[in-house]
Image 1: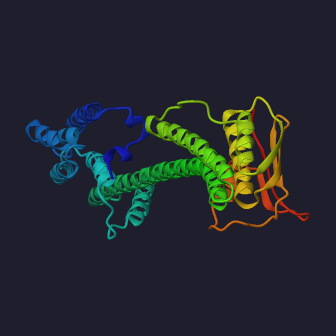
Image 2: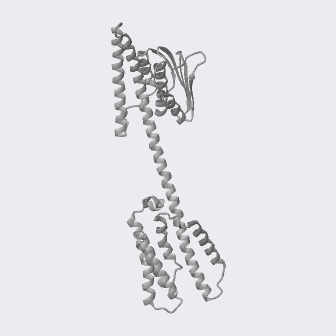
Image 3: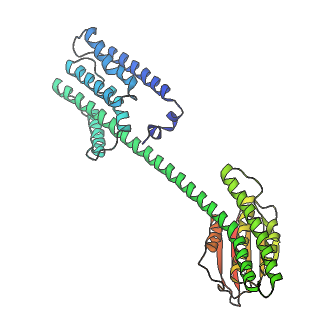
Length: 376
């Protein structure tokens, strides 16, 4: 996992050089503090200063070489403790251990939860229990230092896990966004292609059946195929152009385009009666309404032509209602596999938290009904 994914939001705004400068300042401060701390023995400055520098100064590059820095600081701090020189209870070593815990991969054999619990207990016990003699004091200081190291390790692992979880969540959201966009593109492609291709298929079938007996009617069907295919290609180019440039190349279809949709359906033998009472709709709502009606009418062309189809679109400013009914047989009358039209319509309605039903009518024919709320 990249180190940038494991960095806190505040430090994400700082560059690597700025962070190293902060570590350098902390290293100088730590070294100065160690020099100023009292020693248990009357050690001279010649011994104190070099060990203080060996303990504090490497912290400046803890982000560059975390493991070597930890080894150097821990060794120098341990020597200082053994010689009775000024000692920071492994605070500098804990500071060096944190990036190691934050960046090293997890090892199953390292019991981080147990380390955290023991460290907390030891720190708490050290704050409550007094020292009995000099030997007990030395042992207590050592145990307290180890507890500080354990706490630093645990904190680093916990922060690593939290940030890793946040990174995984961000990747899941990105993957979901990509999946949603792919679904949207697939839905748009289906809606663009299905209507025109259904009309072309119906007219091609008519032309084949009447070509010998009624050549003029076959010629009319071919003209419809030519017009429809050109329109479909133009819309496909528009959609592909939007995908390539990530920009709108023109207005999306809306309810005003339903008249042209009805005219194309009439070419395939489906008379569409429109009753549209909707104005000032958001573009996304208008597009969804158009696509739902387009798919419903396409299904009539594919499975019920010749037929009569009633389209009702009503809004009250807060809720959209769409009803498409036909007087066809109510069942599939043309060969072909199941498509994704009804699924696509349902998905569009579900995006708005609405209701969708589709099925044969008791008195004959087929009905599609969609209702969903929207924000003006």
